[in-house]
Length: 471
Image (cartoon, rainbow, N blue to C red; front, top):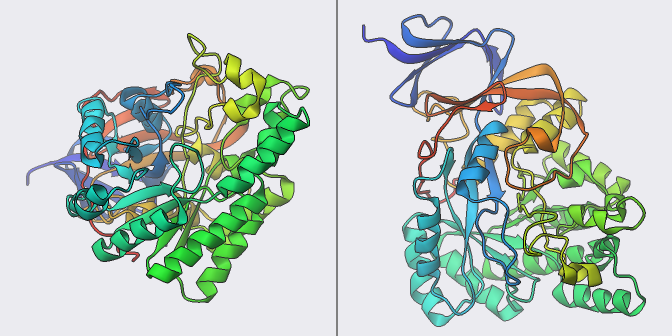
């Protein structure tokens, strides 16, 4: 009998619905056997005492993305996917952003050029539609969906990205015709602008006031409006990076009425609060925590945990949007404009490498969620929602051999010096973690072991996607 390429032996296999001890056999990058004992393999990994999970699928990552103010993102595809591999991820979904006035198709082509040959894990692209011209709506977007770009994101805030209600409805109509999935950044632009102006007039310009300008009320209102537009056009939507109870209640309201509204939350909403934006003493250190929506208060954290347990949230993503704090040539968060007002601080924090350890430690290790729920939130559900399942997000015969081994007893402290991303800080510095990924396997090849990334540029491939089987 021809030997297998790889056997993973003696571990506890965990899926979104079950846990059991068995061996996994791999050939040609695929799982070809799951049985009690597998012996005939060219390479054997002893997983005794470890948990064997499907590789993480991070459905919300920003890499090499242009910004309106010229700030450079801290991660390109090489550093971003290296960081993803170190954190137990085997697939990530970054965004190909359409800049206003430009062809969406051309932006996608250029984004592929940035990624080609530079990825250590597999990638697939969401689109960002910022300029829904007749050409984009009538030709480019439908053609791209047919080409496997089956999800795209729209913004309800940011001057250079937001769509009007009329534009949102037009984009939603295209999604309905093409059966694409729309991701919505739901924050009320006018409310944020109003609050920002009032705060600045009162001299309240420190990073902390970002959390007040981007209020949960503005998030709640926009979430309800996005849901109403989706109901009117009869499409499913994903409300991304939900931060607290108010927007959660809008999602729950919609579901009780039979609407297909999916929900995502992120590590910052279970590990940070708005108090972190105060820095040491309302100083500029708080800029390290500026993201949108911002972290809320302890009650908001408690609500997010409720949603992670009760099924309000379908997926748990990083929303990795890395910037340097210091930067070079004043392009980091700490730049002259940002020192004048919180509104100029680049929005976003790094998190692709720490997403899984934070949820495992705070959720599974502390008994808040089961290990099966962890797998569903971080791997299986995002793979299903975004048209990658069962190739990704599952440990079944025929799936890609994307596997991560977890040591649930391993303790570690998150430290910037140990991370692989391109940012010069982590917002989770000093956080104590119990449970850590110790080996990442991409299509049968080990790309990380015991914290050392052993994979190479080019190991990762681009994945075209199908229409979501959730829809």
